[in-house]
Length: 88
Image 1: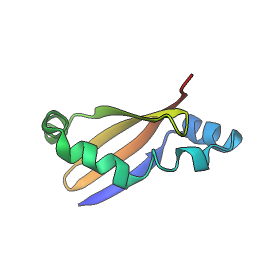
Image 2: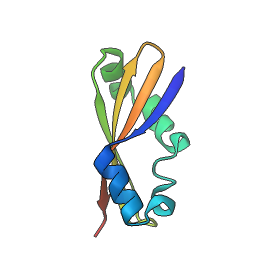
Image 3: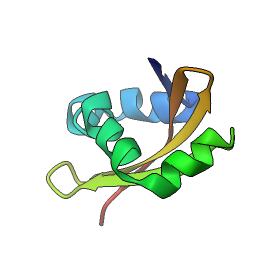
Image 4: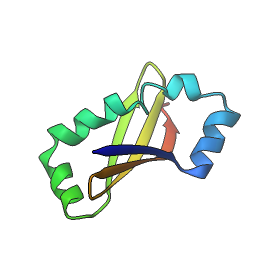
């Protein structure tokens, strides 16, 4: 199994411009994302059909929420950091 973490271009620019990499580090860590995949059978079923799946995660400590777009092909999970949202 391979895991690819990919950033949407606009999201990456936003993170870098606003110096948010340290704040969102725990949210975008694969060790935080993977349990959501494994523990949610509905998500796994969607991915096994070859369809992309959107997942949301947030951290009140970081004050941020992140949307992941996950797509599975063969033995590779491609996890795209799709959106980053400040929690207000």
